[in-house]
Length: 319
Image: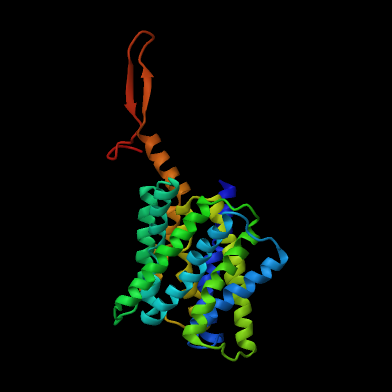
C-alpha cells in the first residue's frame, strides 16, 4: 500500500504541473497562438528526449505510437484550445473534469477494470467541486466549444486507457518521446495552416516555453504514464482533478484572483472526491463494513448448536 501511495503522489505532479501552466501561458507566452504553443510543447522536447534515447518504434509500434500521440497530444491539444477559445475558462475546466468518469468506463470496457461505486461517486463529487471552484456567473454556452471539450475528454481518456492496454517495449522516457514527436508532427501542419509563421519571442516567452516543455510536458507525461502503468485507471484519473485546484492556487498566489466560500467548498469537494474515490480507500471501506456485518459464531455448550450473533452495534445501546 505504501508503494501505491508513493506512486500516486508522484503521479499527482502531472496535473499540478498542468494546472500551473495556465498562469505561465497567460503571463509569458505570445497571445492568440495556442496551436503554436502546443506544437512547441510537444515536438522540440520530444525530439530532445529522443536524442537521449535514440530508439525508433518497430513493427506494430509505429501505428500504435501514431494513435497514442494523436489521442494524447495532437488531437487533444487542438480540441482543448478550441474549447478554451470558445468557452469561459471555468466552464471548460468543469467539462474536462468529467474525464475520470470517462476513463473509468473505458477502462471497464477495454481492459476489464470494473470501477467501484465509490470511485464513480468520488469522480462526481470532484467534478461538482471543480464547478464550484472555477465557474463564474454569466457564462454563455457555445455548442462548438462544448463539443470540443467533450471531444478532448473522450480522445485523451481513450489514449490513457490504451497506454495501460498496450505495454510499451521500451522505457518510459522513450515511450513518452515517441508520443510527443508523433503528436507534434500531427500538430505541425494544423498550426502552420491556421496560425501561419511562428511569432517573435522574447526571453520571457522562451522561459515560459522551457517551463511548460520540461515541467508541464516531459516530467508531467512521464510520471503520468508511469502511474497509468502501475495503478488502476480510476486512481490515476481521479488525481487529474488536481489540475484546476493547482491552477486556482497559482492564480490566487501570483495573480490575486478571487477566493471565497464557494471556491473553498469546491476545493474541499475536489480533494474529498479524490481521496474517497481511490480504489484502495474504497476497498478498505467496503472491507470494514463487511467485517462489521459478519456474524460471530458462539457455542453455548459442547453439544449445542452454534448461535450467530451480529457484530453490528446497537445504535441505541452502549458502544
